[in-house]
Image 1 (spheres, one colour):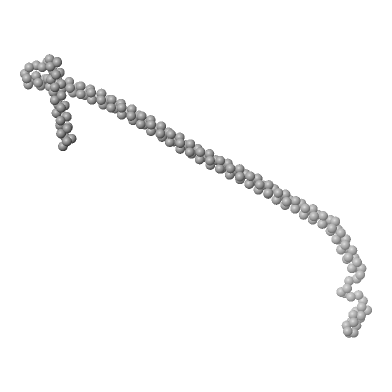
Image 2: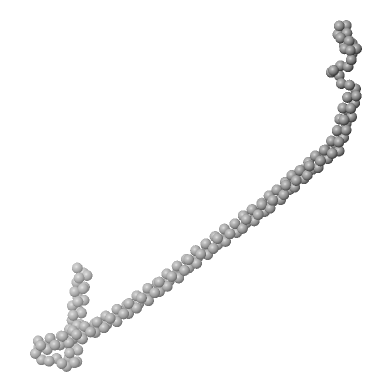
Length: 190
């Protein structure tokens, strides 16, 4: 141990150690560090605190605005969904009303078409009956005239008497109709 102590004491006797700073430097460094800390605490820290508070306030304000915007968006979405549901119900009602009106219009048109068809059929039957009556009358007069002319030629005397002519024609046509009816009855039986 004596060998170790000896070099230290010798170093102390030789002068200040290059590793050890001077006492004045240590005091000056300590005072400067305290002044620097005070200046930092008085000037820089309040600015940092102010910036931190502003940033915190801005973030909280942004979060509040975001929450408010989110609440407004949610309310708008609910309102939109309600309007959409209402529009769907109204559209369904309109479609149902249109179907009912369409069915009613179709029924009315069918009714009108049936009435028009019935009117046309009735008119046609009336016209056919009138034409048949006219044709039968014309045919009777022509057949009567031809029959009396032919009978007059065959008999050799004139059948110009109108009453006799009418009776002869009526009898001839009645015989013709009876033979036609008999022929039809035989045709349906066979």
